[in-house]
Amino acid sequence: MMRTLLLRMSESPRLARWVTGTAATRRMSRRFVAGEGLDEAIEAARECNRAGMSASLDHLGENVSSEADARRARDIYLNIFDRIAREKLDANVSLKLTQLGLDLGDDFCRSLLESVVQRAAGHGNFVRIDMEGSPYAQRTVEITRRVRAQNQAVGTVIQAYMRRSEGDIRSLLAVGCRIRLCKGAYKEPPEIAFEKKSEVDANFLALMKILLPSGVYHGIATHDPQMIEATKEFAARQNIGKDQFEFQMLYGIRTDLQEQIVREGYRMRIYIPYGRDWFPYFMRRLAERPANVAFFLRHLFRR
Ligand SMILES: Cc1cc2nc3c(=O)[nH]c(=O)nc-3n(C[C@H](O)[C@H](O)[C@H](O)COP(=O)(O)OP(=O)(O)OC[C@H]3O[C@@H](n4cnc5c(N)ncnc54)[C@H](O)[C@@H]3O)c2cc1C
Figure (cartoon, rainbow, N blue to C red):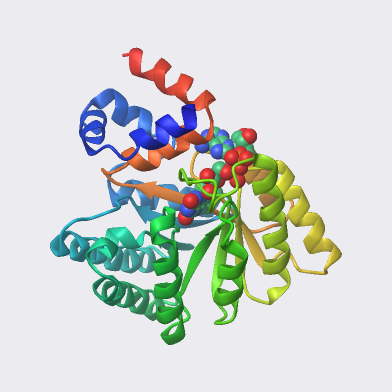
């Protein structure tokens, strides 16, 4: 119930305006968000690199409602790629298609994405398209496939809680697409998504076993020690090298486990979100773990 409530709240623009407008909550968001400006995200990425980890920068924002806002988001991403190159960082970029105007039309959104992917390719870099809620799943897969057919510098995300995911993986692998596998962070109806943790975990492992032997470089994105151990064991059994895939985790979550995995010789990429529109992202992180709500309330009332 708590998860459902928090995910509903994450979609309220009014609540977002109220919460992001106060200094106490802005400070609190730093638990999961690097800061409001690119400089802070760059510094966080540099720290990851020093610790032997790669990064993926996400300029927070989703569901823009005007073409001008979508173009602004595109320009921000073009600039991020230039900056990563100038700073010689080991970092790529994660973005959401609704930030590039998916609600305004597929062709419009794809044309903006193409320019970001071209810029990434020009720097020898890579764009990861995050997977959003189920109303966007089919279009995200289709747009990724079309852009991937022209340019290899793009990949997307598959959510293990979605019943359709195996089919999506197979269609994306058919065009050699790199995939990030995660459990899934949105509220979805049971007809299309597994609800029980045991079912999501079982599908995560089944999908991981399709991805790893595919010969394409994928990301296994989870903080769940059981998923991580099972991935390591499967890779070792199949003679899949530690450099043939990467683990991925979110900024600020299980840093102890992040470091341990690096010490064991695996690749680790940290997803670093930054920007002013941190509210929906922050609420999804609260929804994932009820203990985070207690943390939020303690900080809210401590001034
Ligand atoms: C790099 C990366 C990119 C992602 N991209 C997407 C995406 O594009 N689309 C999408 O729908 N989802 C995305 N997610 C979120 C993902 O779907 C899950 O919601 C999230 O990772 C929690 O699932 P879990 O695999 O960590 O396992 P869980 O079973 O949820 O958690 C396992 C353990 O991890 C720790 N943990 C997990 N979440 C938190 C938290 N918020 N705070 C503190 N501890 C926590 C706890 O110790 C928990 O017991 C991404 C996740 C990662 C790591």
